Figure 1 (cartoon, rainbow, N blue to C red):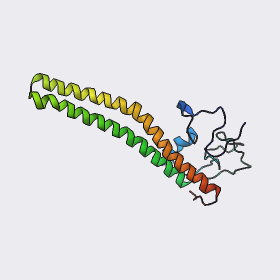
Figure 2: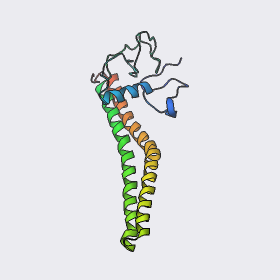
Figure 3: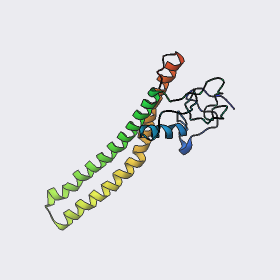
Figure 4: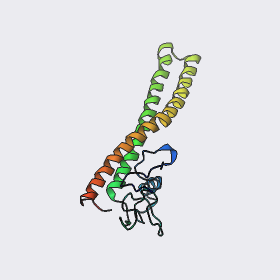
Length: 178
């Protein structure tokens, strides 16, 4: 197996869902989500290189391939990595919500046009509710497809900066603990 350093993936490895540009393992991402939600403590056995959750009998890290003899396991993920993941999730959500609210606001503005210019008639009320339903469905779909993609990329870029700063600090010995 080709050994990868912090943040690199072994050759031929792809994260689930086609997220081959993911920095850390999908298992660590899920665990970080649990920590941020308060459903898991920041304690356990983790690879000292990529912080992938480890089992007691693991020799080499299943994610980055680092042998335990080279980099010892750690008992918690550093706080700066958790903070980077928190900001990542925050940015992902902000992009999706912004697109959804922009679509709904546009829908309300356009739906009020027939009421403003034609008065309250049966067709203007029907147009109002029809446009509201259309823009609700449209903005939800755009936010869930385009917003998810943009938010993921932007959030990953934020996490990548935190990760690179952490790896640089870890290599020069100034990294903070958990």
